[in-house]
Length: 139
Image 1 (cartoon, rainbow, N blue to C red):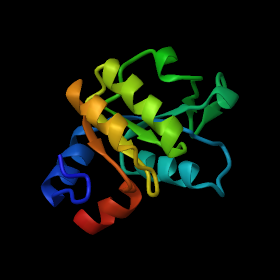
Image 2: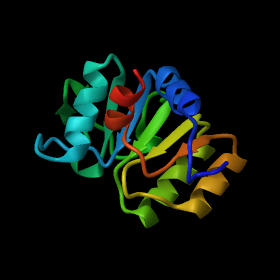
Image 3: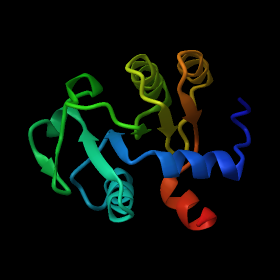
């Protein structure tokens, strides 16, 4: 896949297909991007699952937070990653190994090696994009 350009149809397909989204790097701080993107997705009708070891067991936006993808009680449709590129790579590969179909890395986050591994495992990877920007642009 060409990660320098994604078709609008692909982005739309991912956003329409991902009903449950695990947000890795979630926060309870409403001033931080991961919080307001998570809230935006929830307000749009997605079920969001906060993932952050510091929040495990707490509730964020009405949803229980988990320490890691391994702790989730269900498989989400998408993982939205708010981590540094080196850490995001391991999250992406872990998500793909768990059979999560869509992996999204936020603005400024790109790890081509991890994307290739995740795609080889069958996941679709979007990098350096924000769903909160893409939704109003496409719909």
